[in-house]
Length: 301
Image 1 (tube, rainbow, N blue to C red):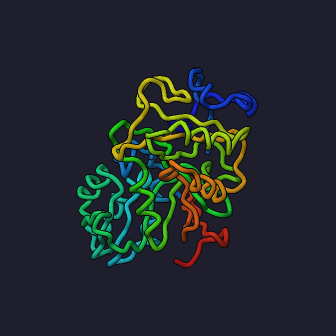
Image 2 (cartoon, rainbow, N blue to C red):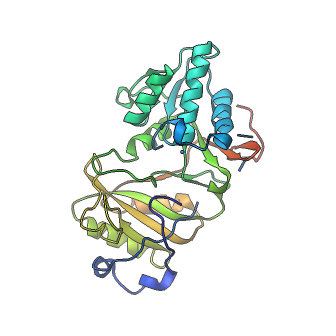
């Protein structure tokens, strides 16, 4: 499903082996797993690569229902977000929206926003963001906690830190997703950003924390994935490694997983977004549904 996904590994496959011993082994990468008003390149990417048929209406609705003139808007990552950026530009050119300032989540997003005619402010300028939208890899049913950061990046590219920072600082956020990414019991990768020094100690502690429920893999830059990240582990622009903590049993509470990860020495950040004023804009064939944290009906925005 994602770049971090592959063949499923049984829960018991490494339950008795410490992570440091498994680093010498090579396996196929374990599996990853991911509602509805009508209607993915990396980071605010071009719409040409997206399945526009059932994502465009979700992107359009996100802009129409949440973005108001004069707002500072966080521009997120993913194909649906790219469609929303393009449509936002269309609204500005028509004059039905005015005075919008965009805060992009990546260099690609800057380029897309400039093409769309959106005035740009950097996150370093620390503007007060009224609203943000972004794609999510998966959303937890009920809580609307989301996972980002599963997408493949190259060594030297920024991690998901900037995207997450924009989302967390916004007054409210809309996650734009496909219907099958709204789930009860999240499985698959939780990306965890860690310091490169003594990384194995951090990985070992995470492995012990979720023993029997998840596998811990250091993400490679090239080649076959494995617990060690192979001979060429990925290093982000910030100088960090990414661990994919791949849950092979459903997570009952994403927020609790996030809190547990935040207590571990060496963890810089993770791809879970929780405790935010969030909405899920869920696309499927023929319809789009907007959910908030209190109801399953379209809220009054």
